[in-house]
Length: 90
Image (cartoon, rainbow, N blue to C red; front, side, top):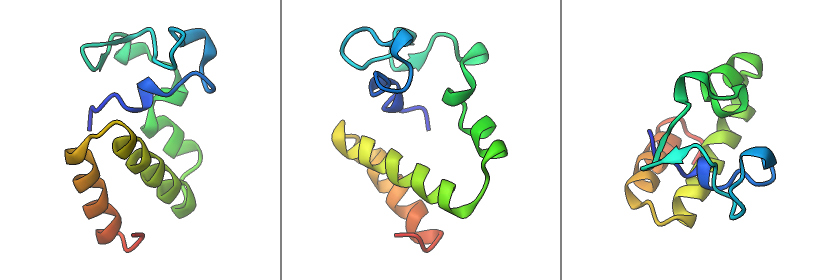
């Protein structure tokens, strides 16, 4: 899912990338301009390989769901709720 919601909430995680309103300076047209060379923290697959357990997955899905709700991304909410129900987390 390429929603960009995480990229609009990075001020406390990657302050050097923050444009001043919590949005990443590399977010352009809702896509990452440095996607191929993005920091590891921005790459969920990299992070999951390092810390792969069910609590991490649940936390990440719930955080993503909260961001989708915050930014009014109804499609993202529906997809994540379906994923959480399928995984018996929700």
